[in-house]
Image (cartoon, rainbow, N blue to C red):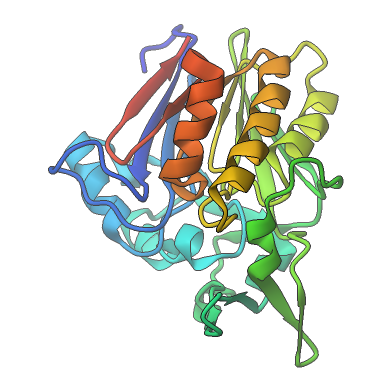
Length: 282
């Protein structure tokens, strides 16, 4: 990005879908974000695959100067080790609770560990935070989202271990990114487990003039077994999102079926960011 330019470039390094056959896709998420003052990595996918896509896209991971982890699930932080090996300078900022013991209780009865690699917890370039924090005038991070409006029932299958007992995950390890570039403000979420409507409500307390674009997953994949229930949910969610006036770019855990239902309601106000896609906001 040339000096003086006021636009933001967002490159999808990993997603469940790929833009074309030249890119790898797997269950996970990773964004490279370039602003006037920063080269940011937001999430690292489930493994090192995001590095291969970065190479194909001409993204220099070694040049990233700051990184953020949205929450403590493997499909967002499994590539932590690979990132540290490819980049020798950037700190990775996350919530203190991101290294909790997290599990998925699948409909078939299987219980899966979905947390981060425990051996990464003591890495010297990990910076832990509790709650909201500000990096500089262009980067605000916030957590502790409350409210359950348009809350995905897919979250009901996610748990954390507490003293040997699995309790419902309240996603206190989830954080969201607000970026300001020129006169544009962009909200970036990982899975939006706390609900994109509730996340937006808190985001707006930092930006009374409004948010221009919202980027991230909405955790609606496999949320309902009944198609009509999913359709009703998406119709209600779409109405709330349209009220905000933001442009939406979704991905990853939203799921193809839910995305198509949202797109039907929201028309050109929502788009999908597959692995390999590039978005410029100016």
